[in-house]
Image (cartoon, rainbow, N blue to C red; front, side, top):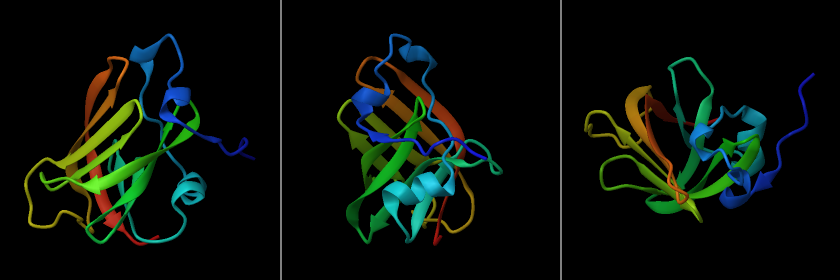
Length: 139
């Protein structure tokens, strides 16, 4: 039996701790992603090819959509849009995330796992990068 579903909070509330350097985006399960994004096509970023995602996002055509992350056990809704670099840019008050393919490819929304870099940045002064994997799929 799993614990209660995390609540959705602002980025400022999720990172409201004196130990900012220990913050890493946490893995999300399907129920947490569905709670924020609902059903539909989405893109995910994971630390490894086999792990659960740490960022999930929806995009509606070329328009901005929304994404979700989990920080300190809390879900954070974050605005998402395609980046000119071929990846994605996500942001909310006090937090930003960029996901960029490791190699520039013709498909910005790959159906197969593609190596990518994610940069997670907090207004309080944390900026950290991760190498991982992303792909876009229907649920």
